[in-house]
Every structure is written in C-alpha cells, then in structure tokens.
Image 1: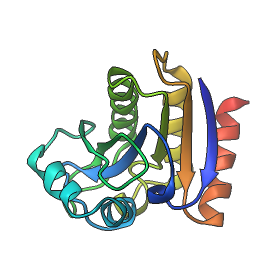
Image 2: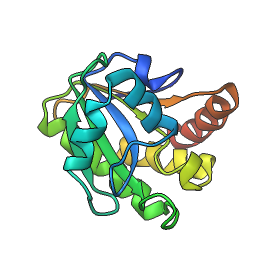
Image 3: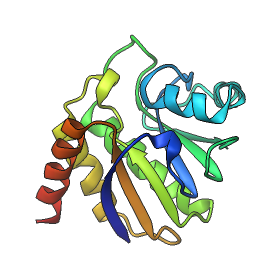
Length: 168
C-alpha cells in the first residue's frame, strides 16, 4: 500500500474516503471537522451525530455530500470535547479501525489527518508516528493509497519527519 504525506485543506482533497478527526460524540466542531463540515454542508454533521456517540477509538461512516469523496469516516481518537485528551492507544485504535472500515467499504484511496493531535492535545510528532506505524503494519485488502495530510508548513515538516522515522 502506498503511503505519503501531503499538505493542504482536507476538504479540498479527492479520495474514496476522507477521514474526520472526531470526538466520541461525533459532533463536527472546529479544525478538521469544521473544514469538512463547511465543504460538505450541514447535513454531514446531522448524519454524523445521528450515529454517535461511539466508543473511544471507534469510527462511524457518513456520506461525503459535497466533498470529492464517496464517504467520510469519523474516527474518534479523542473523548467528547472537553472530556479529556487523546491517548496513544486511542490514536492507534482509531487509525486501525479507520483502515479496516475503509477496506470494508471497498475504498482504494484515503486521506487521514493527524488524529488526536491539535485540539485533542496529543503531541503531533508522536501522534504522526503512531499513525504511520499503524498504517505500515496494516495488511490492506482494497486500500492502495493512504495520504496523511497536514494543514500548515510547520505541521507538514513535523509529520514528514515522523513518517520518515517509521520508514527508516
């Protein structure tokens, strides 16, 4: 499976699956969730919330609406906003569950942000390393290309360094 790091707005990406960095309530607030909500339209938030809450590390799938994707997987790497922070275990679980669900959907391409980092409070470098390790260990069925996306130049450099550390 091809795995790379890209920079940009996740809502502007084209893939079979775009991944939302969600809290367990699946309410789409700010950050990645806000970008996806603005790109997709308000219906995505309503559908996501109708599927929650999910367990920490769990995922839910919605339509992608106006986004250039077939599905959005909402990956809960952090508790509901204000109820705690992401952990290494929740990031690994959310990443693994996302990959498995994408395979179940028959997806070939997926764009994933640094789950559990940012507003969830987990260190970006360590979080990106956990995500990269989980992707590297995953035995894909239909997935052929996974992109870990960053928004800013600084994020990109941190994520790229973490991924390179996993690639060796």
